[in-house]
Length: 98
Image 1: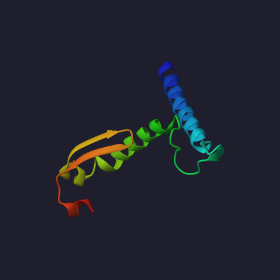
Image 2: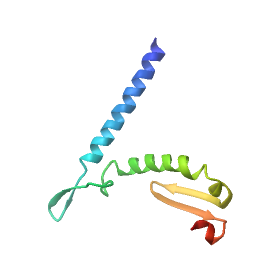
Image 3: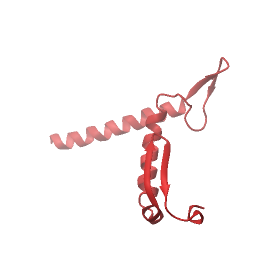
């Protein structure tokens, strides 16, 4: 019974976090030249949630597309990332990257 309760609690927690992130992304205002604007696409620079959102998205993108790709496995020798900055060493030819 307790384990079942814990699973439901975890799902509620995940749902709550997703709802909070959704709210933060839909109510993403920034100030420029003493005027407030609503960011309608992406995340405003300097938003407190921006680094966490970038890390979550890029971890999903890397695990879904990058690290499972044969091109990545055979051609990329080093992959490093800090938030949304990526550094990699490519050992394939230039045409493989196009």
